[in-house]
Image 1 (cartoon, rainbow, N blue to C red):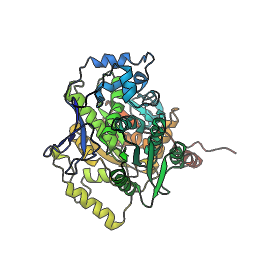
Image 2: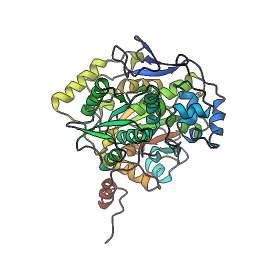
Image 3: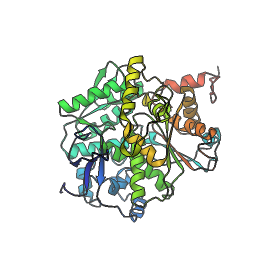
Image 4: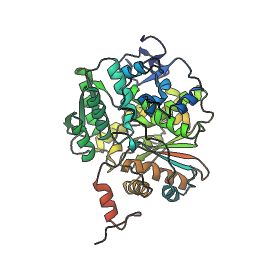
Length: 447
């Protein structure tokens, strides 16, 4: 296998544009900008039929996998994708389980709550991934790159789901895993998974943003390989979330794709997927991305909508006003404002992928907004009443769609795909919700 060829890394700043070989473990260019995985060749649209045929996996776990089924569109290993031995040697998979169960569903009760026809609303639960969240899509590709370059240890910071996914893949591959967590701020169900998979937990006195800083220092100084979404190879795997949604809709673009907003890796990966598909001629229309923040962790929404110093932060064709971001973070520090929401998965004040997120919103003419904790709990609960499971942060997608419809930003006849990022791992949230008869969808216990 040769490493010079189709795939390489490139800085996202158009004025900089530094390039690196695909084996590089840099998560930033030498000037401190984020990197993209880039491909020189344009994949043929005939691959749509190949992907469809692979739904009958014919004994191949790489066809079964909802990530590696699309391997030609993320072939940074530059292997012969039809050669099963090569796939087995390089591609990291949990027996084909990552992304396998993930596709969009129509949920009538959720549609009624949102105020849209159930033919127009699709919700895609990523919680049916093996570790219980969307993270497995990107972790399979990040750990593939880690394995490709011979990393001995993977490192991450986590609000919970990342640690579960990283621990699971590391255990399966027999490599070490260090997880930095904000002490006392993780749902026990997520933390228990990290322990169960044998990860080394390092508790940090602070929040997720502090944990990420420490984990990046560990990776740099102790030969660890970072698997947070600042890693461009994680983003490659997460592109398959919109790939599966689009494939299910026969590659006819919906009007909207809606995500909860945390570190903005999902927003970034969706933007990159749509940019590539449009450039390659695979889609004719660009769906708009909507990012739904928690009111208690509203960095993107505040900056994007001009709620800080009156200036709307934009990608601005690669010239974003990064001073505005720095000023906003200084303001948070000065006022002692910490991100605060019960939806711990999106309790992030300094989204590592904010610039890629802005790029995605610019390309798709996207929007960002906020919802409250009680609204997210309603969103989570109505999904449950359709027989599907999702965590509180995923409820943001449902109530975010409702809010944007009430504001007439999303129109009644628009086709909308909402991503439900993870399953319920905080057992007491639904119990407490349903015990309170004041809650909209509560079914209190009888005695």
